Image (tube, rainbow, N blue to C red; front, side, top):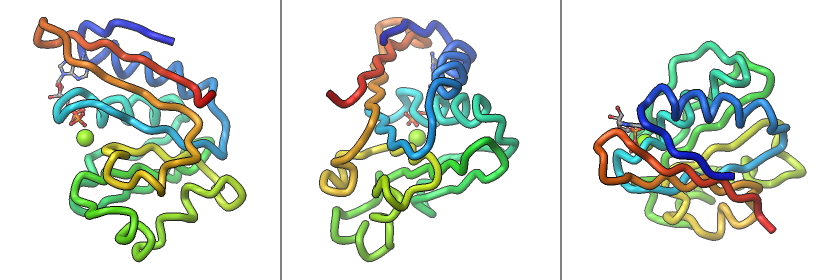
Length: 143
Ligand SMILES: Nc1ncnc2c1ncn2[C@@H]1O[C@H](COP(=O)(O)OP(=O)(O)O)[C@@H](O)[C@H]1O
Ligand SMILES: [Mg+2]
């Protein structure tokens, strides 16, 4: 699945529609440079499952939980994580184990904990295009 987004609103709308097709348990990886739009994608996704919380980047807390929608959403930003060992120390593996996961884990910077995120369901890649507000969004299911 692939789309071009021309502005923030279109990214949010796309993520909102995508969320309606996804069921828990589910692990979704978000790839893309700083400022690509990963956190805005989560905003749309959270809206799509009808959760009411404000979505902010969990850069310092590493994980935010949004509990007011159809499923719990676990929003990770692993930008500051030092690796899989720290993920284990923080007890994150339960959120990536489909037998234990009761909601949907959405992960920014999954490359910082490759073992943690091995069993993902979808990978969303957001690429900045030449136009300042334009993005290519690619969604791939794990084969
Ligand atoms: N089409 C678009 N989709 C998403 N964000 C966009 C788009 N065009 C411009 N932006 C801007 O890009 C930035 C994306 O920020 P953010 O979602 O926090 O990125 P990331 O989490 O990938 O670092 C915001 O400042 C947003 O306003
Ligand atoms: Mg972000």
